Length: 314
Image (cartoon, rainbow, N blue to C red; front, side, top):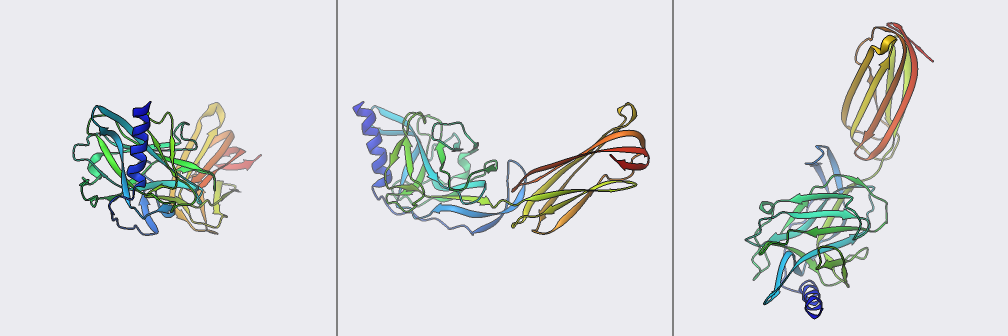
């Protein structure tokens, strides 16, 4: 127990002890960003951040004393002010012998399941000289986008494999520069956590503001169409729709129209058609789903009758 307690104290001193100064380049406030996991492209914005480092803490295998080693995980809590979390950055480096990826998870509780998770390979991190603590950079953890609740506390968790000499360095500050969260340390693979009082990691979160889509059905004698309109206050990014028609005698009518639009400004609209005439006879069901990177899914369903090429709404 004394050895474990000593490791916790050593770890807390490393972050809170006002070590040698480090420097990093501040990123622009807005970035045209392509999510590497989902393939979506949008302009996300800086949300929460603390960018003033004065020391580092190891993440992964840690050997503080003779015949003593442990696996350190660190976390940073934050309160988002944008409804969609798109990515996270930390000011970091790595040990020269690090071979396993650094893993980042977002959780709504330190011991709950991951809301999203991403791994970044060692090659994305500069090798840091621990004697000078200068070779750090902002490393991007491009996780799957998730919806979050404004002003609710979430946790960014960093960890790596418990393998000898496999560790990273994450920078932080031993004073409370970020008022909406704090840093945490775990020495037992994230099973329990110790708050590092009045300390924060150097991090940035990026996100999107939520907007709203409206869906209107239009009919003419030769077929239906849908109007997608942005009725919110922010640009809708990566608008995607799925328009399907099914039915007819013996269920012979099937058509699916899938489309995307990179952006839809507030107050603007786009029209989705069925992509050419449909020939058939009998009742059909028409359904459409539309969503965006920062707009929740809307759907509509209409029953109609097709008479050769003519349509009658029920």
